[in-house]
Image (spheres, rainbow, N blue to C red):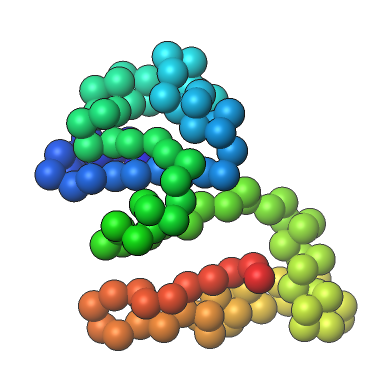
Length: 121
């Protein structure tokens, strides 16, 4: 999100989280994660067109586009979810096929925009 803010200075980018401590960290000099160059990009854009907030309702209501980011599950977690949900225990290579089919069936596309996408309920 920080790179989007840097490359698109006319776009307002808001990052929201239910965790006040996470948002406080993003608003501080001590970011909660390290990626090379991230500190500089955040410092350059924070408070200009990059904002970190716990006011999820207000930010979502004001948004034109929403990215949803969740923890990345491990391969075993994904396998367990799909095998349990679809009763697939028969083939070792079934997961990639199931995952692809499932992701394709969960998106609605109108030619210009992805209207709704979800992976795990």
